Length: 254
Figure 1: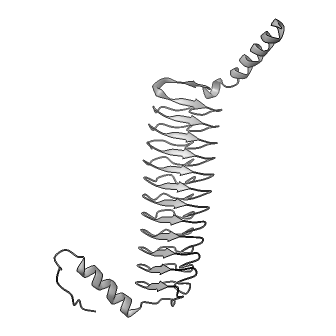
Figure 2: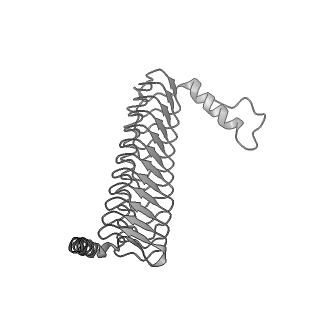
Figure 3: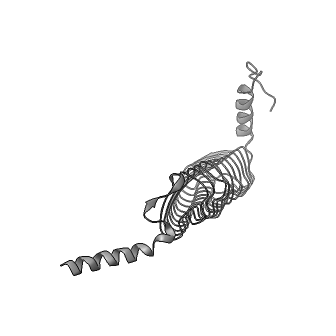
């Protein structure tokens, strides 16, 4: 019995010897915690947690948490970020307040801030700020766009525009540089590329819109390059009524 116990202890010590490179499992200086090979290997930050192979390996920021293979691996000055998933936020170097959950979520963006990505490869290329993506490949191709919201698989997968909102499967999937668009419904505004200030509601609605602006399509296909006069006038009226110093001016020039 003593021989068996001694053997078990010897094997346990041998296994821990292989984990010393990851400083595992223990709390280190500056309130840091790491678990996994090369996790926090070159860390100079404090109050960080790295769990997984090479998690936060090159970190110099503070108050970050990374769980998963190479999560936040190359972080430099970024702080206050959370990455959960293999290679989540792996390339981030500078940015604050990002949350990435899922394989490759925000994986390739080097500079991004206050963004949230939940899902496989959501916001994978993003270097813009204030974006939110939930779903498989949501906002996947976004590089510099800011203030976008995409909820649904492949929603806004190709956009680089700003301040767009897309909800449901493949909604606004081909938008490249359009801004201030709202699309709700599966495949809504599917082909829109550079159009702006559109509101599209319903499955497949706005399917003919490509470069048009200032349109409202509810359960309608619309027209490529469309700019409906009534809708355009209505949008201008709304903007004038809500502009400072224009209260009471009910008859704007159309």
